Amino acid sequence: MTFDEWLKFGYQQGFCSPPVCWFHDGLPTSVFEDDEVDAEGETCLHIIRLYDDQEMKRAVEANHAPAVWRAKNLGW
Image 1 (spheres, rainbow, N blue to C red):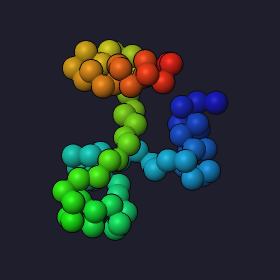
Image 2 (tube, rainbow, N blue to C red):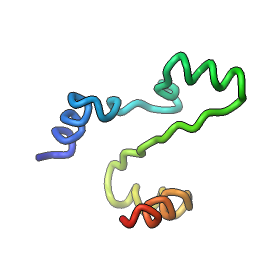
Image 3 (cartoon, one colour):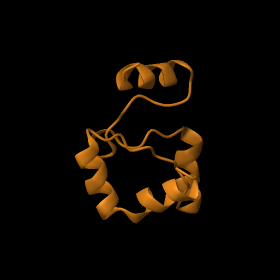
């Protein structure tokens, strides 16, 4: 199974959204989450970053500590 097939399967099963760009598309949120941000100032949204290749993975992990320690906390 290719990555694209795996991602499409996850979408079809209701496990994830299609890939979107935070910068150009914004975060994929529900109206409830938007209202929560407006009322309380924050909400916790779990995001999965899609890497183009291993070089991008290494570059992101070098710049974003939570990408490393969250994986370690999960035992990955």
